[in-house]
Structure formats: structure tokens, C-alpha cells
Image (cartoon, rainbow, N blue to C red; front, side):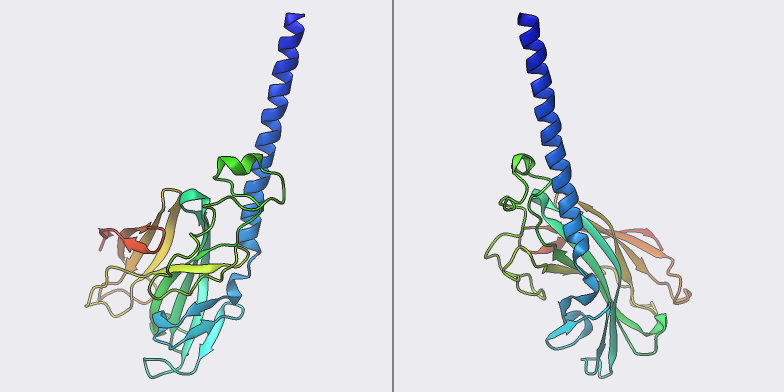
Length: 239
């Protein structure tokens, strides 16, 4: 009889573990779908990066700006979109934005940066132990979204006030800008990790480089403080 009870208990424990793992996997999948369900080509961003007053609204990844601080019309467009998680399971999306003249060539690129959005929250966060046991359709656990009432970083949009809408946390820009280069430097996200860091690769030009092919490389790691992003020391890896 003791052996029978032991077998029954073991089967019950295994069933509970399997059910919990299934819920956690479903929660992670739901969060990923939530991030990717947003049409990131139709978001609104602050105009500061492109020397534009007010905000810029993209449509299908593009916006035509008639007036800018550069004294010329601009094409504003997005290219790369990256997804990941910061501390406390905060889902984020990194949107690469370019500001360029209307000529349509790489030589016309004037500015570039990475806009980091807090992605919409799904019913449960994959990084929180509580979420794995929460029933489907329950509210997202505390800490899975940006802290309520926190001040928006300089140059960022104010939080939308709803966990179902993405809002801007901050903007990452190139930290190494050699004055001798004929083309602007630019950056790309290489890693988003749950320690609260975003690592970016910086691409910069030497005077001999064509517009297509920067030879310089550097790495900067940005830290999310809960209110803004702070760059660490930039390390040059190739010139």
C-alpha cells in the first residue's frame, strides 16, 4: 500500500510540474506574440533625433517631413526591429530610425538612433515565477511593465498610460563620432538581456571609406535604470 501511495504521489507531482511548465511556455509565447503583433512601422516618435519640432508619425515605416532644423525636407524611416526582455521581464522592442535627405542614397543620411519601446504586456510575464501559475487571461504581474508614474527620459514620449499600448523608454545614439569621417556613424542592437543592459555595435567611417562600408567598429553597453538609459564606456574594436 505504501508503494502504491508513493507511485500515485509521484504521478501527481509530475502532472503538476508538466501543467505548470505548460502555462509558463504559453505565457512566454503569448508575450512574444504580443510584441510582434504591434505594427512597428506605424508608431509615433519624438522629432528630436531628426531636428524636427514635435512628433513624427511613421506610416509603413516611413514619414516625409517638410521642415527640419537642418533647413531641408527629410525622409524619416525605420529598418531593423529587435525584440527582447530587460529586468523583471519587461518586454522591449528596439526600432532603428534614420533621418535622411530626400535623395534616397546612403550619402544623404544625417542622423540615426535606436528607439527603445516598452512593448504591450501580454496576460502573463514569462520572467515572473508568479506568472507561471497564473490562470490564462489574468493581469500581468507587477514589474512586467515600466514603473507607473515614472518620468519619461529626456527626448522620449510620455507613457501611453495603458499596458496594452507600446510607449517609448528612451533613445540610444552613437557615442563615438570621429570628426574626420565624411559619413555619420550608426549603431545596431547586438544584445538585449534581462540584467537590464542593451549592447550595441557602433559602425563608424574613416575618411577613405565609401558610404556603403564603414571599417570602424565599437561596442557600447547601455544600462536601463528604470527611468532612462545610461551609456557605459565605448570600446573601439576596429578602426
